[in-house]
Length: 478
Image 1 (cartoon, one colour):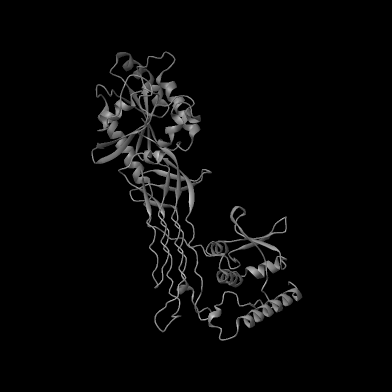
Image 2 (tube, rainbow, N blue to C red):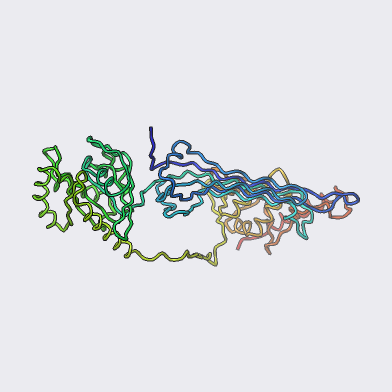
């Protein structure tokens, strides 16, 4: 049964925002007491947070789909909807968050470090929040926005100071078991270790962590054996320890060639050239192993390696090795720059950035892309004429209609707002004059227009639209 997982694909869905409420206050002798619709609640976020008590991604391997709760809709009486509850997912220290293309989104190191993997949708405004001097009692409210849907990949890279690397059955698990309190599985067959093991070592005043990485073989950097699955676990380590078997029963192997092969795999994997190395000649309690260690040690030292002869079984040479590792770890920690306080980076928009773009496609369709226009479209109830008029007013104030005129759009041309797979397409009815002013009464509340008969009001609005269309036809883009 799988007990350790260090790579999963996670499908997260944030909560949707609640819809705003369109309501009018009513009481005795006040049939139209004004708008009192409340705002919708915000959808819950999906947040990844480091928890040092978690050591594997196993839970997300079994349950890869996670969703936060939705916000509640607003209600009458100026009652806002309840916000959705954030979904906090605990991940191990050293988890890297990537998108489907392999781009790093976050590197979570340190207890409590968090990352918002999916952001909840905004709640829609109720008609009380939309009321203004011009629109005293809106008969509509804004819809809540959908929450983010996201697929992310979680990769665990073990956070340790020292990594033990070497061939299978070189004695790495035995070594970590005698240097620390870790109790990994130990047996006399290859690939006994199937998951990284962590141990804590105390040497004098220095306390450091040591990781036993599953055995490497030639081709590990290309995925042969277990190498590619676990080479990522040495990336964060500041010291690499080559554990070489001096009592191997394989006639075509020797410590020097084993070292060369593992070094070549580390080089091909990349990013580890600047890590200090220590060579450990293990199993020197065996007579042949002791002789071989004494034979290869001068050659290894001539290459610049610091060499230790040890026996994990007989507990020989362990104290010297432990303090040597503590010295290198202490130097590495001292060389690291001090962590700076969190800085807020402000990137102001360019002075000519309108926040949207208008492009003409090959089929003659004009496409509007931008954060605000696309968000406003998502918030609009297209079954409500007032809401559609309010959207048109907002787009006009943003400058979308003027940009369409400059792009060559004419009345009746198709305009799409949003991406190709989820756009709102409509036939454009321009409302611009030469002075770039609104000429319609879109989105206004006609319940407060006075005592004009309904038929007369319709004629007046039609006359205004005809006049606006005529002025637009006579207008020449500059």
